[in-house]
Length: 480
Image (cartoon, rainbow, N blue to C red; front, side, top):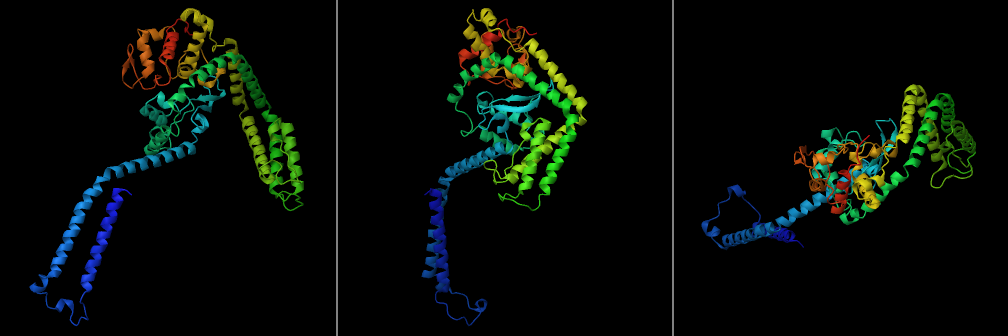
């Protein structure tokens, strides 16, 4: 039991005892009053100056002593109580932050565990819809300070899918909610232990190099997908009437099911289930979308495991309506959408010819690493895994949109010897990328920090940081 609880208990018992004493004294010797108290003679001095007064004074002294002792004892535990309040407040903030992370679907882009993911985005050079690479945020505090992370939360990141979340940036969260979200992001429940984060270095290098090795296949698939998009836009006017008719029939069939033989008791008469199945089959065949084909079994309440046929029918009808609506919008805006789709296709075909993402690792090794191809590959992998999303245009949009290494994006271009102009020696550059930039703090030659450049010291070894610097200060990043 805590000291504060004991003190409160003792004080409460003393107060009860004192109240009982007063009540008992007031009741002692009282008989039937024949005279109103305000008319009765006053108590004489002899009566007042008796044992009764002594007892009253003694009780007062005892109570004063209890209070004199209990108050200091109470305040002895004040610090622990305050610490408990802080701990409770932090726990509540942590729980609210976790709720905000889930409510505003941060995990949809950054991964449920914060390990990274992708977000839908329209790449601005090409107009192509892409899955934009969203960074891991369960390691973000190994790169940025809490103040810098808070800035990105409040104001978002322009020219990317990251929206502003704070009121000052035009988002929905007030300062307290941002604080609570920050509390969760920095908690042991969310943040990846540093030792585990360091284990991700080699897999990230391997993934970055594999991305280059599979680039031709990715480009071929991207061009094929864009070609399918062009064809779908061209076909929309011819399909929209059929799609709307099929959707209308399906809606009417579902709404006017009425009574009828329902063998499986799923709420859909057998005749309706069969007719809807025929409509879905026709839609899938006529519109070229196999996902629209749904089969309802009149003899089973659940054709698919875990979903009643009535719910399945409603979902399938809604999907057909959505397709019909999409075709109508596409048909009504065909000229604009076709121009965008063809422009995107031309962009991809040109990108496939130019292959700006390619890096001749052997040449890098010969020029910068004394012919050591393995070391040159590691240096390139480190750069692409950690630096390219800010210093190579289009990198986060994927191989088809990636420009030449070091072409610049959120961060400056690193072509044509700029690193050697900005930093007179390699040691100063290593120090800079180890610590990152600080807003308003100078770095290198004429550089002034903005806080956007993260510090990679906690996430990469000194040897790897030196490899990155050696690669950037070589003579292989020459631009277009």
